[in-house]
Length: 491
Ligand SMILES: [Zn+2]
Image (cartoon, rainbow, N blue to C red; front, side, top):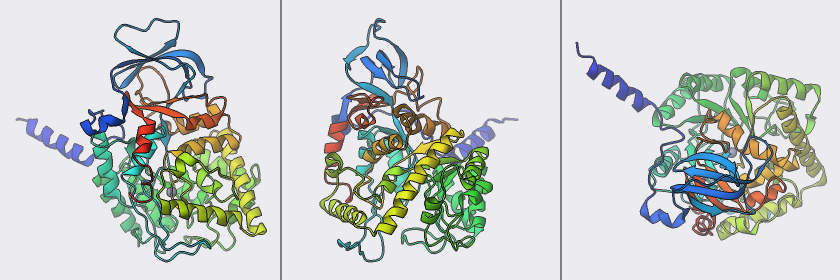
């Protein structure tokens, strides 16, 4: 009996059902994209460089990093000889960190039609896809792997991943998240509204078959729908996170969710008038303003999350925009916005600055509580991830926002080395890719960021990105940014 055809058929069936891996084997880059390459792949020796390896370990001064093709060959002291055949690049005064693993990195912008300076806009909110600019912005700013964490055009995101992996577009490695798993009552007109647990299960199954590699539940999903979605995602070996409101953090942890977005800002367990399965009016603002770090409620919640291995994604940049004039105006970031997006951002920025004092005090209290809860979660052994959440507010921009997240983690009380670990190795661990990415070590993928400065001493130096290596190809940060100047907000 010849088993070969059967074996082949089952192999094909298995591969059709399996999504493309997040880290695809590197393909040669298309000719027209070579203009963005500063250091072509090969045998490269980065000499006299400070190595911040992403594990939280102290930096190694004056080291040599050997890159052989798509892999890191070794990290050795500058005194050791560079083997023959390596092209040496002197990086005196510079540092390398692992490529950032961005865990809340959307591919879209949120447009508020006819927004005016008083903050009024007309319905409906629309979400244009930034398929051209976002991947370039992420890569240019040091993000080499990212999760989309909710998609409005999942086919576009899947296709852009395929094109990047094939070398026909430039951008990071992608974990494409399925469409938002949203219940009824959404204010996003582009989202499907799940009507039942069976629909939640079918939606997850369909998009897993299309190749998405993660899921995200949203603000109006019910517990029964979330339970069905978690069950189907886990049955397929995929993880599911949530930006929750209708379901509280303890409820979601008990249902088996893998990750919670937005730090502790969108937990609704203490919101007054919270009805089961319904998003509360305050959408978590009341809970975060009330939940002091170290309080019995905080301790119980953090113990539950750590015991159940639920990760938390810190997205500080989008919340920092609610603090009056807290966020600096970064001219390099503003330059990538369209004039309309820039105007909309400045309106929002001014409105945050002119909020009534009582509301401003509540926002400030919530911010301080969240920073303390994120620290307490890490101290208790929780896995904290990092992402910018580039939406809603034009001040949070792909890539620039990932850098800002690291700065804000330091403002939260983490050391720069801890912040860098949260933004690199922790994300790799969550994705199950820590043997490949997330730190700088021999045999790992050559995904690393050359920074003109020392972010271990001053975290703001993470903005001084010069070259971003992805699979051993060194991309020119400035050229990538120039190619999207004035585009973010349009396409
Ligand atoms: Zn988001």
